Image (cartoon, rainbow, N blue to C red; front, side, top):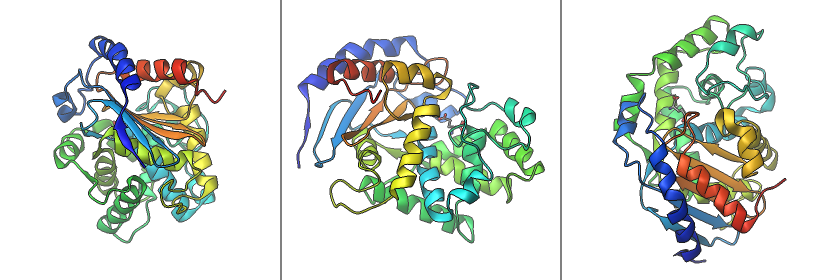
Length: 309
Ligand code: GLU
């Protein structure tokens, strides 16, 4: 098992980095504005446990919406498909990630999929546990196992910054509570959700976690089945159809791998049966995807030809 800097990837980082100048930091979560917009990092973790990396690879970032894949995997494994898909659908929306529009037009008011905020809030509300502490401890332990790093934790500064400004996410929760899709206390769900979004890691840890999905739920290093095969498959399918916000179709055309991005500028990529990819660059395009991160993945696809289509 080796982990080393890659000259080839460094070249691609050089080519992609200028694109960050055309993007903006997410500002609706005030603490995210502290990021350095020029940062760009990438890591690839393969199924033999080897990794390569380039750019600002030590830089930590919060998962934000990438955590939606992890909460989905966790909740599916703990309470089963039937229970989850009673409350959240399987279809892409074409709307922005935080849109409330479809909740009013779809009957019952069930969110269309677990990758948009409304759907992810439902999933978070389903995290098992007798109290919020137990819910959080169980979920965090799962994320730590996936990354192979027991020190993974959330940033309290980011969590508080989002928790105190999440009016829209609260509105989504209250709307769904009114319609019986969400049960439980909205403030508790918001606390749990903002904690999961504020979990921090670097691109190497993100790539390692991606390799578990690439390896059909099995830890590539130990061989341990961390996520049931069927659940890893469901997560990858959602990543293809809804992972890159309302640009998921374009991303499928141009890069063609299961991926999930977050407004911190992180992107989790999964090349089935090959490797996991972690990318980070915080300047975003107007749909919320990392500009230089997306460009870098396009360049990588041109070089390594990893589209699954
Ligand atoms: N915590 C963010 C929110 O709920 C996540 C959004 C994202 O990364 O897409 O607004």
